[in-house]
Image 1 (cartoon, helix red, strand yellow):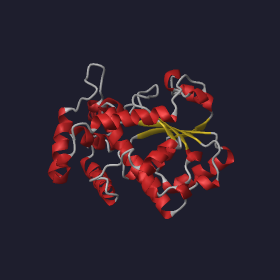
Image 2 (tube, one colour; image 1 turned 135 degrees about the vertical axis):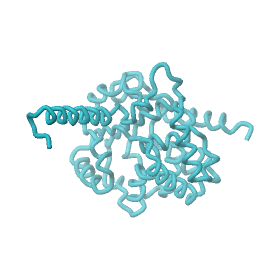
Image 3 (cartoon, one colour; image 1 turned 30 degrees about the vertical axis):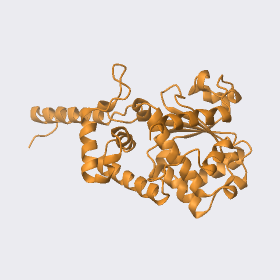
Image 4 (spheres, one colour; image 1 turned 45 degrees about the horizontal axis):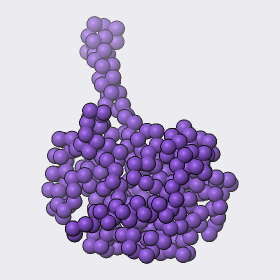
Length: 295
């Protein structure tokens, strides 16, 4: 038996150190936390699906034949959402398709022709646009939570928006961008108790955001919350995953410049991007019109 300090002991110690170094390399995290072999580099097509991903997609379809109608890109987004773990991806897909069927969106996908969904956009609660990104290539969404009135809308409206948004992102953003996930800027200006949805369905939806949908929320920047925001973030620890909580940052508008270039920073936060709700909806309508031609 080799002991430390002997030739054999030193050799084994060095081998153990080498193994530890290899393990550290394997554990090395990329910016978007996907394996290095699934990183899209400058010489790649931004819509690339890697050979190993195609094999995984075949496996998903083999395990769930009902997914045959879904595109390769759609399934690749779910793989990325669960970091290419097949069992975890299957669980996510099962939850997603079950909830989609529950609301009838598997037959009639949500559309801006739906009055409730259109009104939801018209409130200005969400500001988003194809190609809007932060400095790190993550999709950019602005949310003004004070404009959501739980008593004035059914929970189905929030699900309609989230299913609509999932389809919209997959259809309009590149896989390269979708791999990087998104950053959400949530503004609590004007937020009050009346904007809090503590109903059982509201709590269920909050959990569904990270447990049912494939959106990779990589950063949540919280603005203008005051004392109420502190209470909300404390309550959020009971509803949201620790991983998502750790990605939250409370700051002010000036801090947004650390993440977002002026091109995509809203003028109300000192940037140059001035997108009205009307212009946003018109761009969505144009997209819907183009994608339904010939159907």
